[in-house]
Length: 507
Image 1: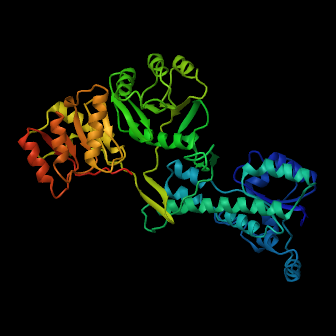
Image 2 (image 1 turned 90 degrees about the vertical axis):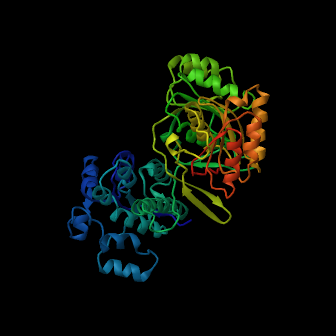
Image 3 (image 1 turned 180 degrees about the vertical axis):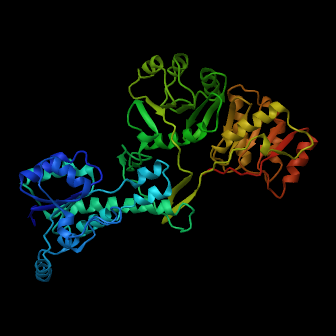
């Protein structure tokens, strides 16, 4: 192993917290410390003797601090090769001191963007000197140790304590990889900020926080979640979320966002097996559960209101995997925590990305999220009979649920409750028949429902089957070359049909 003793260090950081133990160790080992500005002041307050970078370069910090360390005496001290005679000769000629350790972090670009700051303030948080120092030290890992984040301080202190102030080539290479991870992440976020209009058609994403999962979709598949789940949820109880939990939770959050009135949805394998609105969430839950109490077993629940004790008592009778709510009353939370593995998530009001992507074949596909939701204002009545006011409300509700259900899909619902759905079928006729049979199996009268379809009817067979079941109002996108055949059947049988012009395929 190529072991190198650290004799000199450059420290220039934005965040000063957690730095003290490393400073104390460098002081104890007699390391020469170079620094700038606020970091220099901080280090001197810690009792360290510091050589100002301005004294090393004979240049002051200029242009409002934009240029401080960008100088051959700094970068030469980092980048010269210790085993190259020519480099060593030039170093001596130009009186460039060697730098063995670089401790630098980056301006908070992501945080500044997230704060909603003005563009001028965001641009000032594009680090130049810091990122250049990180790249230089990481490139020359053969001779230099780069510490590029305060999250690495504890690890570095332990390393230097264990090895008497020295590092091995393996150590330095490992920290160089961390540094390029940080620099590439940083540049990706800068690019995406400047490319918000999508002028450059490239795919760049960087998520540094990783949570290993027990396994993926199945036990023989490995799985990892990349992201800051704690920004969206506070987990109040239960085991770690699994891969399948996360997929269902994502679907639940999307469906739950459709409703302003008190609502509860129950999902299984990303499809709603129950969804209802009511004056209270207890009523909404009982209605949603009644849609399909069999499928609800082991499902994911979401509500848009605080869970009270009365609702919790009803929910506690059901075995479910996850419950998502904006809050929980104390006594309700205590009751729901009675099952230790039950996952309880308090949802935070976080604005989610409007883009989605997934791997496909040998690449990635990206698209805008489906954020269109039709209201009565988007309905165009194409039949002689206009839907009644009650039917229109039911059509709006049914269309919301249908939008979040796997294609091909048909949803049967009233204005407050989903009765049933046919999901993920290869034929829209099969989806409708599945929905009707399922509703009847739970003794629902489908003649009280309306029908929503995620895509157009290529033939009049679906409206014919619906009519025979007693369904008299339909919402669909329209757009088939044979729309007139479905419209004609509806007119002949006193059915109302509205078209939205918006398809909601979901694969």
